[in-house]
Length: 124
Image (cartoon, rainbow, N blue to C red):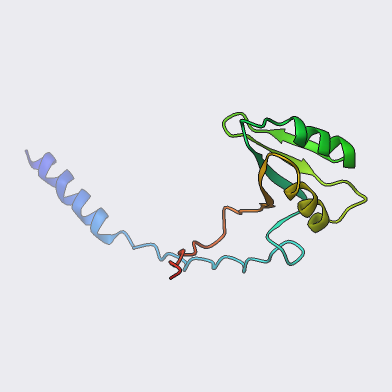
């Protein structure tokens, strides 16, 4: 019994003398810098099309200006394309906005995991 009490006392003494480790303050994250002053790809667009009209008019337009299909979405009626080298991104966007069946053309935005969360304010 004396040995058990001695061990408990020794354990209490050892743990009470243990120095608390000082934690260093967290290192602040570097300031977010947009790529080339923009937060979207300088070459890619996301194009949505009407399912009833189909993607054929869009595919024909892609072939006509020699753009490149990067990805065809399976869940939604849309695809990601890379603009042709002969056109600017804005000119390519304007071109596809006029194609039959195209519902929307959007810049391929870049979202980084370290971006700060920005609340979306309601517009009135």
